[in-house]
Image: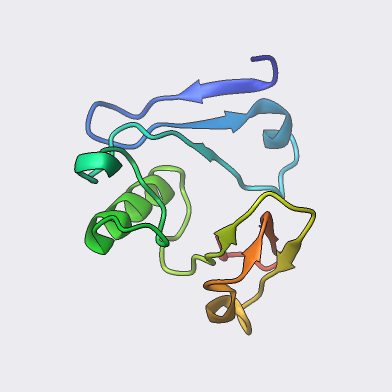
Length: 116
């Protein structure tokens, strides 16, 4: 895929994609997760990041920490939403980060450093 490079960080860590084009924009930190190298079991056997699934929540938390830290993000300030394909996005900041949990939208955006 033109504009993308695959980054692999060893056998026991999460793998992800980054866009070479977005990497040129210095203030945009990003990654695209894969389902490889996760801790989830059974039907969720993968790098499941779905906090709104019936997967074991401890595994989802481990998966989330693994991919965010591997990609260079702080896993302490993560905003969550129920992703639905739509034209809705939510602006997130330190004041509303907890309020995003359970909201339905297609994307989250922020201009505040340290929020993922």
